[in-house]
Image (cartoon, rainbow, N blue to C red; front, side, top):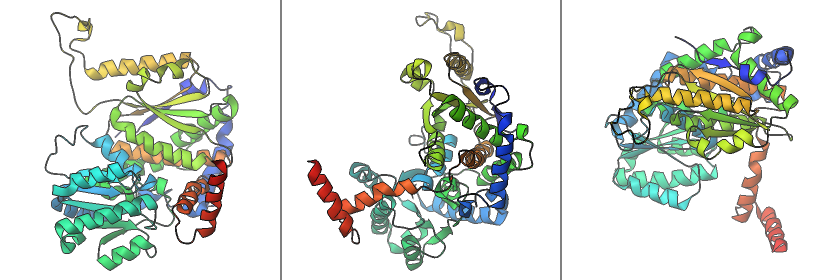
Length: 452
């Protein structure tokens, strides 16, 4: 099978000659630091060789659990936030029918996502939708105390038990959590839920190839064996002994750091011309934003769905501040075929397209956009994906993960921590008068009073 193909020609042309190659020694140092575990954050390197360490027996265990859920549920709610849901949602939406809600095939349950917000309207509407459904829950939380997820799980657990009975609920509630500690682990052991472990050495944003992502993806009816196989292939292609020029993760990391440090390109826009990839961009945004955005550094990760967003963001991209570059994911062959029809009246003037595949029109829009943006001063990185299936999505996942590790080290930050995430939580707990936050509550209320 082919691999995804990275083309940086239209980005490297914005750099000085030899600038990409000049990163080779630093990339080698970063690769060796990852392999030897000598870099900052080295206790979170479990993702590095995760694909090749996943056994057939482990995949079978996940598939068996997914089969039980599929056979007993019309809907499955994945309760998680950040890396505990974005990877699964990215893969499921990339591979699903765009109108899955309306064309439920009765074979696989609808996969829903919650625990990623604290919207009363969202949760009210979700629980109302589930009132006449046989539903299950996959609760994904290492600690079991993340506010958004814990709040949602408490609601769903009660509703599931009320509707299906406590014994039946045990069969359709699964916990993906810590091996030994935390509230979610304690609850799962007490209730007798099936459990899967989140490895201690894999951070949330790198966890899609653990049960965090694999179980929901399998529940949706997709082939996780092929997903892992694609990641294994890319693990080899991005290995530390692969020549710099042939290693896509090394080249991508070098080019984006060159654009950032030498050309002041502070914003990377992930672009797709296939709306199924919208949530893949959301996963990518967390991966790079949370890994690199620290110590006053980091490229800001943004995303656009083209051609849709060309009618809203296209003007700014074409002629706005030249602080951006684009990374375009291009799907070479769609999974469906649809021809543009002839119309005798031709009032819209589109008969010149009659008989052509819709995808041919989309590809010319893609090419025309890339040329226009490069001409407008926007460097363009291109990633060609043969088609959207489990194998190539697995390749994309590992490619971006490995490049992220290298890129963060080139930037001289710890790519595997996220100290800034806790700031809003401390304020929220203080404002809610959470036990243990009495001093913080007093201080924040005094501050708010002064600001009035």
